[in-house]
Length: 494
Image (cartoon, rainbow, N blue to C red):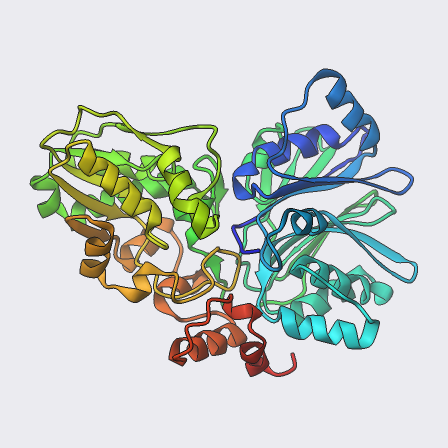
């Protein structure tokens, strides 16, 4: 399985109320982060777990009551997943669904994470040699490392994870005594926020702040890179275990993953995306001046299209519409499914584009299948010219940290320059936002973001070695780079 960014949620109710309501709505608000499986784990005289494949279902009345009665307890964690490793069959999706329960001797933890582990093969081999452990997904590997290392205390186990594991991991966890904890990798690649109720009776963690908002919780802070946060009956404990001289927050979160109403690093995502659009208008005014109308790919490009319209005064028409209940995100599908789903997902109101020169705003181009399909549909609808304004810079390198682009050959931006991309997708021009404009709009600095998929400069050592070796190889191996054993060995022992 490959990686879209998963979503996690955890809550502790100090007043003893049932936590399931918070967990359920926290997942619903973040279901865009993972369509493959979902799961809940609560603590009430032992762990109670329910996982299944697909989207978080709509449950009402008696069915909701049954779930709530089974998932009792005042503390729990929850997860929506798009997998980062392993097989994609439905049985594997269910087996790898999170939260997991991991045990070692008398120790037991519930565990859910968002991210991807670069050195997963080496860690899996080490666990097999020392523990006889056969692990599937990287979540199972990370949870086993943690549970086998906490005999000296939870903090010592988490610190071992931070020092031994290379990659992205934002974790929420649960212990049988009702202790709720969370931690982030030392580079803070994936988001993780902390929330609290106005009366202080509920503490929570959420990948995105929308998971807090829907539950009426107030955003308090982010879990810092390399930090562990523990909620217990005794209060809140926070400790920065590993501190790096830089962070590496995933820049793609702003363009694609996060909901527009989420708060990332102090800025609402919609406002950042609006600035992307204004940047494009300023950079490519000559293209704007010869165009008739702005269109946007729903829904991640709509805020950028508004910003472009606001900057240039060019009319923005929402002629492209998304079929709301075709929920699959195109670039995380199998190739055989992708084009068919794209064609069904996007509808164009015909008769409005005949003879017009159109600018289509989109968040990114990964493989090009979505873009090529939409351009073809626009031509059929009568568009004379199609110019693509792309908010995320040209993607030229694979991701090792939780985005579904793990080989060079699948990336259209690796195979072609801007002119070649335009020709391949059938557009009259492709105009990417320059990297410096993108970074400035986020309000962050270059050394606070992971931009490896654009620059080829990875924030972790093994990822850099593996990417360099794969790029230099004449072998067009289509396996994910971080699952190729011959490349994993480049890092040696960690």
